[in-house]
Image 1 (spheres, one colour):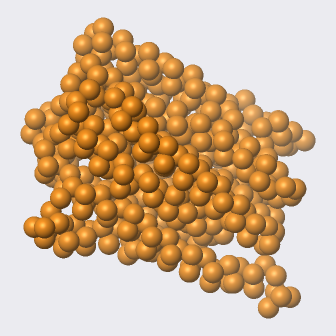
Image 2 (image 1 turned 90 degrees about the vertical axis):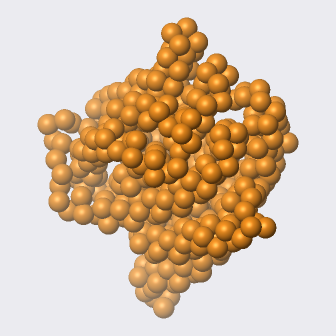
Image 3 (image 1 turned 45 degrees about the vertical axis):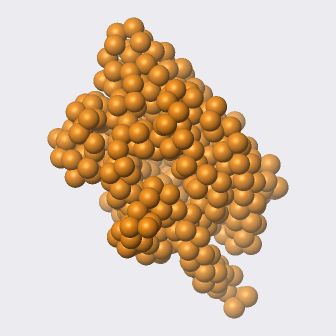
Length: 459
């Protein structure tokens, strides 16, 4: 009875056919992530079409910095998801309730801290990133307004992570659909009618984030059973906080390391001028839709693996990994190739400048065509996190992806013959291949250890 209310939306990940349930989990999550991207894409499209290329560059060039500042705390939401899924799979209602209330209070504290850092440090950090002088003032304004809504962003992401832990990816989709429509409408009103430029798109994003946060919190408060959120029970339970931090901090640091390498890459891109920056911003916005489509299977793999670990289903974890990899390869190849094929048409949504579109296509050919490799790497990371290894993929990412990209920029890119924007972009697929291979080696040894722990009679 304790879990009857969530049964309508939850998914039994521990028994029965895996693929139909994985698709039922991943497809709404894929749509949710794409809607979340539309928040930023709508910003970029509206300013590119109605405010000019400098405004487009100002909004797009902040993406790497926003990811850098938020990824640590979004990593904590991954920790909350994994821990909640494990307790749900093991039917440990009291532990699940403690996880819910610790996670949601942690989201509020994270949001407040991010707002303070983002608002106070925007100009200095953008200056360190060598943001072009023509767009610096606009970038600072956009960033400061954007970070005023960070508490709402954290509330939504932690709340949605808890719902995903029990297999519910549909209701977050509904909430983001409502908020996304409002975001687009407000973008058009603030920029076209009221001429607020980048301030308008930032304000529209903040308002839509507040709406999605309100809806997901309201959903959790109306639930029954262990997943229910009760404000009077909000508390940082020390044991749960430690467990969330144990999994979430390495995941967050891994995100930071990726973002840090991307900030270095963005700084290198910035040296080629505003046309290349605008083209890279538009291409990045388009390719992000491919990434989140693949990432839905990474998140599905994390939740399925965590629940099956809680239920003690060792063999099923291998089947989950195999099916998640098949799905991410198909999605990555189809969407990556389609994005390149339709690239010029898609990019005209962002800008009418032929020079900007040409610069954007340079990036799409190098980054988007082999994007399936990135998806394969992420799904492998999902398995490691789901079975409790969070520090290991962080170390592999530090060495294999971030370290390689930094070395690439510091060495190959500095050679005059290779001092081109294409050289910068090639750092992405090369780092995916090397890091992905290292993650699979880690999975082999981690699963052998898990087998001895869960199936001692097979040792």
